[in-house]
Length: 213
Ligand code: SAM
Image (cartoon, rainbow, N blue to C red; front, side, top):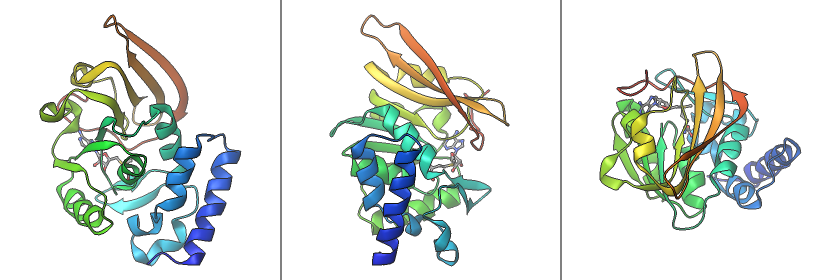
């Protein structure tokens, strides 16, 4: 159920995100339309429209709305973009990307979360290629991708993700240690070289996997 109260709470959240510097109207429109309370345990739904991360089980979290908006804004999603998300988690970031018109492949390494989120996204009619596995290696069968987003803190940039990025493609990845990570935008230029820009600091749960150390 998505009540007037939920919609009103989302309007306040969108206002807060604007004040914090999220200016992409398409990102804000997606956040306004997605029932974030459905991605959090129903007993805690009143936390859904606060700008904070929240536990989703298996030691993982749904990212803070500001972080979701920040990463999505950097991706410059265009309808039809082929996007890879590493760390499906609750599925909320996936919903934002799909709502904006992305053709999404999303990978999650926690089996219980993968099963739960697949069910929820189906219920909410968000269609994506959801994969259970280690996303630190990317996902070769659907490559190359116009955009890749990593939603867990990586100790380094996995080589496979660079390889699976299209020419002109954008990779957004938080890189650092277990305490703090710096958000990086990596652009694969037409001559094959990489432009790597580092931005603000965040704190994510760790990326765990074969190419994550
Ligand atoms: N995008 C998520 C959302 O909207 O809820 C945020 C999820 S949480 C911050 C990060 C997720 O990355 C966790 O669910 C974790 O299990 C997952 N993860 C960590 N390492 C991974 C890997 N190598 N491959 C796939 N998922 C991974």
